[in-house]
Amino acid sequence: GPNEKIDARVAEMGIEYTPAGAPVQFWALGGQGPGVPVRAAISAFGPQLLAKVLDANETQSSSLALVFYYADQQGLPLLDLADLIELLKYLTSDEGKPELKGIGGLSSQTAGVLLRKLVELDQQDAELFFGEPEVSIDHLIRTTDDGRGIINCLELAEVQDRPKLFSTFLMWLLAELFETLPEVGDLDKPKLVFFFDEAHLLFADASKEFVEQVAQTVRLIRSKGVGVFFVTQLPDDVPDSVLSQLGNRVQHALRAITPRDAKALKAAVTTYPKTEDYDLEEALTQLGIGEAVVTALNDDGAPNPVAWTKIRPPLSKIGAVEAEQVRALAEASDLWATYAEEIDRESAREMLAKKMGVEPAGGAAPEAAPAGGAPADAPASTEDYSHLPPPPPPPPSAEPAPAPKPKAAPKAKAKDDGNVVTDFLKSREGRATVNNV
Image (tube, rainbow, N blue to C red; front, top):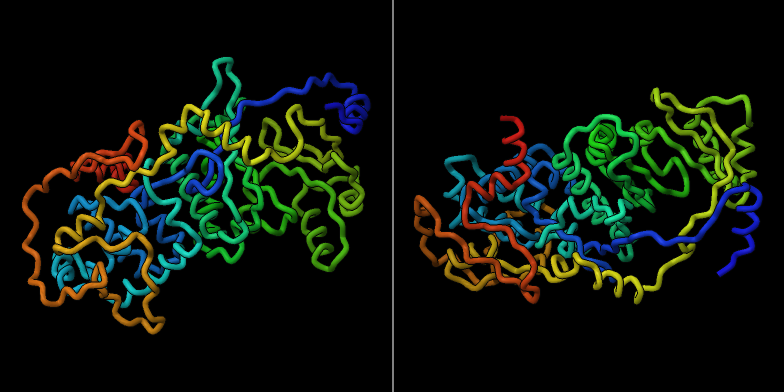
């Protein structure tokens, strides 16, 4: 309906204003919310990216790479955290240790540390994110029949309690975009622009490796036609190494009420080009509603002069959308049938259990190994396997795994896991190998 403040701003700016909606696709990370579920397989991360998420050291990272390599060689699909956890436990058990002798070993102490890190990740509900069907990057870059870009709104419920899951998703998404999209150079307008809200959660207690990875990706991904904006209350929420890669600034009012606010205000001023038009420290405290201090890069890549700017009102609705409406729109989406139901196909956990002749362990993460670095060689289930003979060596060619069995959505598409070479080529390491060749 009519809004007096919007009408006043439109009249003040002398612009035409006709309210209009925008095409929107609602997503929910791990299906935790009313949007279309977003998932990715553990194998899509690869050991390098997962090691950064886990804040693993060099020894742990190389051990993780060994585990992924073994899974590729043996045709063991790693789809979720349970698959990786059970494989780690198997490879440090008496039955599994001999299988790594030819390519290097995995110490029980290192495996125990990795297990604890995986449990920590699982405690933030990361298991909800890992799985299939994996979201396609193409479904994030779509337009309507009349050429309008579709806005993707992705929700992570209770994001403040799950910063690790938030950062895990960010690293995977940026890495997938960087590897998938071709080089396009400078475009008149980008293919895709991200706005990461509550950005301070990404960097709270973040490791040095994570911050470096984000800074590097943000710097390099521009050539792929992708823009990234971090939305946060205070500019010092974003590390300097990342902040230095961001050429555009839109700063709304800052109120210097506490010493932290005063410090943040001074930090905000330093992120802008020098200007003689304003006392920025004073201007940033005097901005009104719908006003901001703005600078952006010009065509030559240099920052434009700082401008005290009035923001034009959005054409679409201002305010939150009810969850029921989001759910209705998500379920009416043409992507709902593809992603709504998780596919539960045979993966490493079930295949290892079959190899051991036992029932597969439950999908929940086990308790963390003792902090003292005790051997993490528990079997893949609660039963004692010590009486079992070592398994025979694998045959030259493994039998293809059964066709994927969707839990409830027959239209969902699963990846073929019957060919080890195909699996490897589809993995992050496989794609990197092909690119290098």
